[in-house]
Image (tube, rainbow, N blue to C red; front, side, top):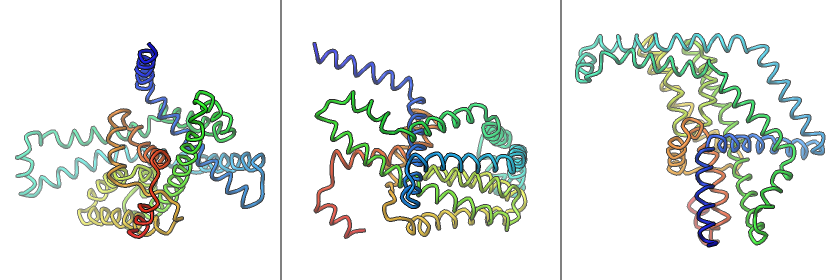
Length: 337
């Protein structure tokens, strides 16, 4: 009877988790925000000998002031540039299809594709929807505000909320629970910090590079490249598409230079910038990251895709506690590294 009740309870729990998967991922996003805030607060407290009671409000005030000042100074121009991007991308897609159709090999390629007559309209429609997602921000902003406030609440009193998790955990497993939580938070903290620095570097390099190449909307495209860097593997590929389309609309050579610029920036980010950061930064195996991205994308769509990498980082921390690395394997791994 006990096993039957446990089985029914497990099935009900899995069903509820499936129905509320988006809410659970938003909660995880809030945990990521809380981990980042806690890391900054602890660094500030240790650097300037400030207690948490003073450092946490100080961080919130400074962050709120910077966000408010940025929105006030750059908000209208950023919105205008995104509006221009929404109209320029479909136009660039039309020009690209027309340019390809002007070559013999291009016409042959179009003929081989049975649906070539609808290519331009389909690409334009897809890019317009992408722009609409960016601009119709009611749902996105609501989710970001919810995640932001929830992350602040979690960062303000993390021990209070974790105490509830401890209460529902049998006493025999609480030590293991604490170790898993500490490892997951440690991995998340270093992964998020490294991604923030990488995002800033990629955004700056892409913006300057596109401006030097004369590609329009360089600032907006650099911002998109920075944000998409948060999504490993797939984000860099997505970020190059709008920039390359706008550049190709000017000239094929400029389009090629734009693609080479993105390749160079992400090569520097992966092989120079990231290795120069702290040694404790978590480096996720690419195959593991892509597997997590595919699974969570199927389960929860774009939200799952965006949160797959931090989820994999936290899961690796838990896995290291549950199945620790043997001393011999660890030494051998360091030798190979």
